[in-house]
Amino acid sequence: MTSEQAVEVTRDDGALQPPDRECDIGPQSPEQRADTALRIRYEAAKSERARPIPDHPCNGDEAKFADQNFFASYTKGLPHFGSTAAFPGEVRPEAYMQLLTALRSGAPDDFNLIPLGCICVDGDGEAQQTASRFAPSLVGGNCPRRLVNPQAALAFDLEGADSHHLQIPPAPKFDSAEEASEMIELYWMALARDVPFSLYGQEPITQAAINDLNAFAQTYPNAFTWPCDLRSQGCVTARTLFRGTSRNPDGSLSELDGSYLSQFLLLDIPFGAQRITPTIRTVLPFMNPDGSSGGGMDYLTEFEEWLAVQNGCPPAKKDQIDIEKRRFIRNGRDIGQYVHIDVLFQAYFNAMLILLQPPSTSNDNAGIGAPFDPGNPYQRVPNQEGFGTFGGPHLASLLCEVATRALKAVWYQKWSVHRRLRPEEFGGRVERIRTNPDLKQRYPVHEALLTSQALKAIEQGIGLHPGYRTHLLPQAFPEGSPLHPAYGAGHATVAGACVTILKAWFDEEFVIPKPQTLDAQGERVAYTAPAGERPLTVRGELNKLAANIAIGRNHAGVHWRSDYTASIRLGEEVAISILQDQVCTYNEDFSFSLTRFDGSPITISKGARPC
Image (tube, rainbow, N blue to C red):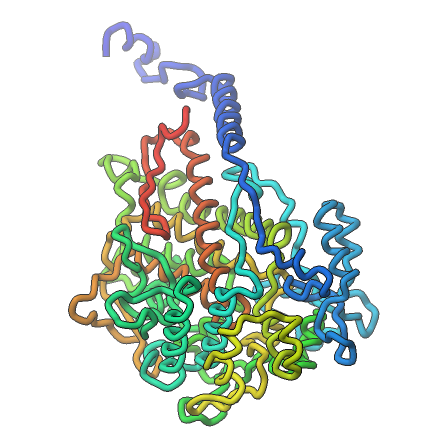
């Protein structure tokens, strides 16, 4: 300090004082900062506006079958023709046209005019809700379920890409081989709900599923939609059955190593002062391993029950909760129950806690302490750490933020673009063909499905499974699917967004220490990798987590495989666009590097946009 400077910071009594008398110090004056904030907002808005405006093609089924009561589109919750009509289970076309009128106009009053298919018995106007709460409360209600939030399709987002600036490809057509392949898989998933993941390929149901799916792949290779195990003669193996399709940078599938369930659904969760064991309240199985009744049930396997639920009526049956004990997620029925009542970003918030908390020999509230991405600015400085920026609180709030923006993006696709029917609706058409083969002319279901072993097994049974004597798709939830279209999937889009944030934040190559798996009794044990298997990394287990949660909805019967594959990439785009919009808002020099679900790398850094 020079003598001149010393005079400026020393009072007459010798005490030190700040060199400036203003409390607000920093590189910019308040006026300059306000102008900079305006410029950052403006440049981000300009950058988003400069995105190419995509087309939003659909599969054309709505227009193709408009004069056949829109039977190939999503109509659940609207009024349907009853059992005595010429085409029972098809929507009353005037109701569907009112839905289209509202979506075209965007006028709230037009949405209020959309008719529902079920009428309040007591006339009190108090309808039941499910999607806006985290646990269904349907049984005993007298009023219809309501359509879930179609006006969210019209909401704007002012950070990241606006929902209408993002695109997913058309869904498979009703009469396509690809649609048939997805339905074949769903029938097998329904039959295999009570088969432990650890026994895939070792018992009759999943052995038959593997054979049937491989037979389809050989006959219709261009419509093959499942992950392929290149280390085997048949693409579908016990390793790939019902798994996800994310890839490593070298193009290999990233989810085939380790157990079916992600480590982030198996490891204990350090939740502040609490430690949470990831057991859940399950529902009773439909069938025990010995073929006896498990006390539980599958739903919508009778046409009248199915029809009432298509009209939006509350289900007459309820979940059969297993009150004996809480269990680890063992099978498709368990993961279906997890995603039945979860908070949409719950699994990724838990994963964040596991990744953040360091391991400890003295503290049982420990995680795995994965290092941050090398581009995190506080990985490179010795005297500071992140908190509100590039630290735990920043990450925790960002996960919630991308989740709600992901929902807006996918709700636009659901309601305004695709309006894809739910698998249970498709199953209703297949069942009508079973009872009246002449309807094959009306409902052009692909022959691959009608001749599949899956359809035979769902009707007549296989192994110890008795079958359902119907071609309806058995549902794991009493109410079947939610009252919004299938494509894309909300759970899968949120999965894609949240997992992308976690992959950006942490070192993807970090190896998971002390991995776990479940034994044949469903108890947690240490995982021992077979010879030649790659170590379990943060990237692979996060990709697997996204697949577990998204495909968990398929295990329940409410979504298609392409709902998962398209939607995790939609969520990924939402998250990346938000990270890109935020680059100019931080003082630190930083970068985020991650691997997309398709295996390609991307880096987001300061300087990517003019700041």
